[in-house]
Amino acid sequence: MVYGYARVSTAGQGKDGNSLEIQETKLTESGAQTIIKEIFSGTKTERPAFTKLLAKLKEGDTLMVCKLDRLARTAISGGAVAKDLYERGIRLHVLNMGIVERTPIGELLLNVMLAFAQFERDMIVERTQEGKAVAKLRPDFREGRPKVYTPKQIQHALGLLTTNSYKHVEALTGISKSTLIRARRG
View 1 (cartoon, rainbow, N blue to C red):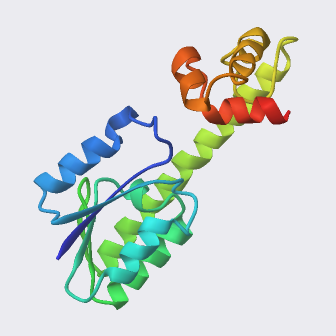
View 2: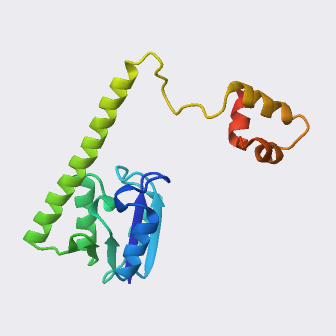
View 3: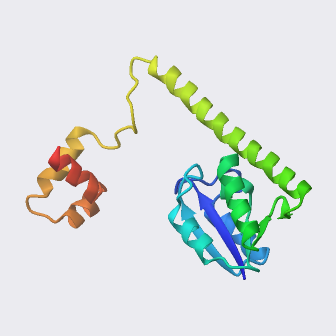
């Protein structure tokens, strides 16, 4: 059986050909019979759908991913996954690399590419931290996501809750039930 694994870190991720839809299409076109999709950071080794998939794989199966960084973002975790697959007789097929064989050259290539995946992740973290440090210098800097609704809009929606359901107020104002519940508590 050929299993495809598609992963994004966030629901909105779609840049560089990494959206779940694009990955699913590539995996299907390349022969994946079952595709497991997940929205979870690649820096985490315990990803629920991925963990279930690894447990399901058996000797003779193939695990297919579009890019190595969809499998893992660190050399250590990626190497551990690959070693586990090799030892269990499961093939690893990375579409932009090919089938990764358990040979000295195959393992060298895998380790080099995993090191680059980790380097890329580390660079993203570094750029994010630098951008945040620069942003903190601005007097109008606020931590977290910007507020979508003004306090006046929230108060109006809360007032509507006295005679309407959350669902109805959400339809009228566009303010989600969870936002209204947090505003009511806080």
